[in-house]
Length: 274
Image (cartoon, rainbow, N blue to C red):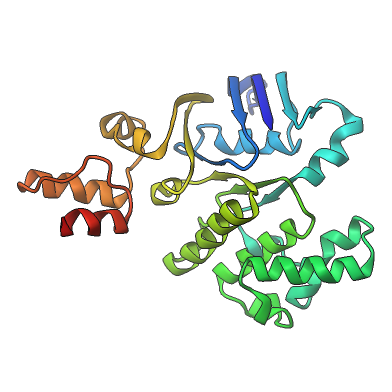
């Protein structure tokens, strides 16, 4: 479990003062949960994410990962093994000449034995659907494939938490779908806890819980259908709603009787057929 209590974080601004990026955040994330964090640029969502694997440390308050406090220097190595992080640009994360060498890099640095590394690499590539690409050069892959390899490199180190910071932001729709299918599979089949920072509302719809941030605060929290039904509140926060929910509103205005909690294409198809 991740437990955040009264977390505050400040950045120094060019004038010599301080800007509060996070303001007394309180949050719990349970093992096996899929949590999406949304908010406009500057809301604090990426700053929050970097506290989960101690890339940033609290100015006040605490972040505890499985009873390990990020402020305890003796626990940093263990925390970073438990929380794997994937960033926005996959080209910044791929360093080897072949896909399997890249995935093996993390386990090798952990001192894992070669036979176990071989097993972890094969299993991780299978889990992200990239086994047939293991001998390919990473720079020849598509954006979505590169990001899946980056995810494989993280899960090969067997983290308990997978932290995704805008991992689909630079991808086309096909690449985004490839990555999200992989993430949903890892969460549902491997019970891997996922924290997904995103500005794509349709991706947040896959989560068990959605956290909405503004100006360093959590301003809304709940299941996707609860959050995305608050269309006016989201618009006031300069956020969109999933495309199917917008389509639903248009169709209702034209006289169709549709449920008020449609989030996905499949749910829209079922509703229209009925």
